[in-house]
Image (cartoon, rainbow over all chains, first blue to last red; front, top):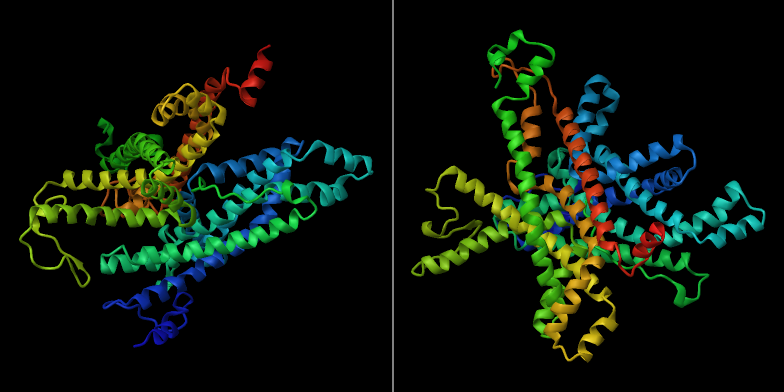
Length: 268
Length: 294
């Protein structure tokens, strides 16, 4: 069996297209590359959707946390504290069993017990909380002069937020937000280790890497393959976010721009 | 546990709960909480040591040592940490067995990797197949500690490397002007001063370490996640004196609250330490403290 056949069989295995049976013996390098790469589809799916949806919620939360009114500030603060202060791993477990109980009362919630939706909801809340903290920090460090200038131009309320506060916040928060995006993608590997079942062995990249390591009792091949894929993914994210960063800072002279610096202390 | 617990079916309300929460299996849960605390207490200093060694070697003037240090600090940037956890546990285990095999069984002529098996001679097995259960458990725990220390050492190395660079260059130049050697300047000038710069990063790391402890579950240690799943599952009246439905949700809620409380307490303590350390320092925070007092 050539490598092309393997790719045709297993390339989309993680979403249920192609050969059903996973290889059980005589594992080839090609099989490991193909299956782990196929699992990456799930990591990208979780990461992209959670980031996109989480962004808007995070902005709302950050504005809420910076609000004058206690009624708005307190819930936002608590939400951020709960999701940032507890391990994501425990959040996954809790959410899974919560959804299981909900399902028994109201069958409408049954999709939530499968990974594609349930885990996505948890990741969405989680990234919203982490990003909100970043955005809140940026809101606090908007230069006073910018806001005074907006006042002088007679802007207030929504138009001030849309034209001054929001773009400046985004510009200041962007380097930290890039890191958040990278670590969110890393966090997606936890999904299938935390209660959510990999239905018909449709799992993510780490699920397959772990499968191979268990079967061959040799961790030195599947995990480096996984690492390679993730380094590639990280480079893509850095590239994309770098483009956005350039766009956000295009009005500044080149020496006043803040480059994106990768800071690794963000495990959940 | 208590004398009135002899017939649980007659109990109700709080007395039932007090009996339920003190069964032998729940004691296992409480022991595993202690395991987590021990893990934190052991891992934090070891990881700091690893981190210090990593950061120091990343600054070394000997090229191979510097490459090693840089590579060590770089590994955590691009790859999910849980992949490292899963990798190191097997890799370390096999590494130890391989070394023992080379030393103890030099007359062994078969290959170690036979297809999908990893075969070493009986004397090289870790722990020995004849050793009691607790040795196996301790060995598993030690492997987990070492794994945590390696991964978090890489994080700490990053923080300390940054802190070493944050020490003002003029301080090192002054040391050189006084005729100190590189080694002397490093130990006498840089190391004592870098901690103020490192503390925010290190306290962040401590929070991260707390939040990483549930991953012990993935390393095969019977930790709190294991017990929460075990104890929370539906219990049939035929097998236990305390039958109940699926309570796993509540057990994990309790764990969530436990971690939140732990995080909050750490936050308060670390804030206090930071205030102590910045007292009298020539930094913005130290200056703010001075002005507030005046």
